Image 1 (tube, helix red, strand yellow):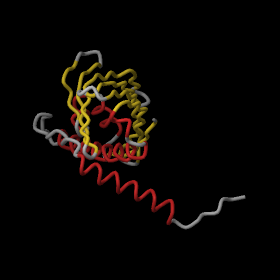
Image 2 (spheres, rainbow, N blue to C red; image 1 turned 180 degrees about the vertical axis):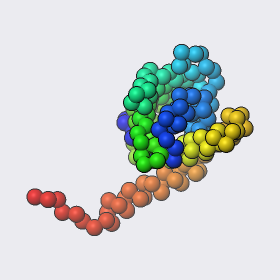
Image 3 (cartoon, rainbow, N blue to C red; image 1 turned 45 degrees about the vertical axis):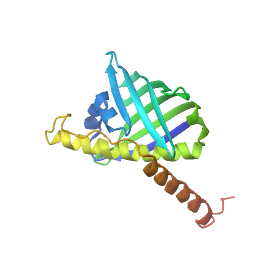
Length: 194
């Protein structure tokens, strides 16, 4: 399934691109993500943990940067992993594009996600909503981290992203779903031009 998200960062494109070039810094901004090994050559091992309701999903796997286009400010990461309890697998190709937005940067993230096992039981709407919440948290963590580095703090002084909480994720995902329903059914009818 293809999931698209977009957010803005109040820093220039070159500064955000420089940050994206440091994968350990980017991973520290993703809730529930931990890098466990850097193999060099843009290849990493890591873990991702997300709680969705009563189910806690923990994946261990690998990620590799397969494309980095400096001129276009575009990066592609291919990641795959298995649930640590053997209840499923996930693979994902993530494409991030940075474009100027006023004085800041617009970050577009496309995730081509394939799930099997326990994670696949959740519908596209729930997975999209949870992903939107995670991207919102990621963007806030990214802005905080870039600002802290600008103030001269070392990466070790900056707190890593907190784990992805099941209750909070579920509540925020439900809010997003309700907002979509309200927009669909309660916005004034707009006739199509003939």
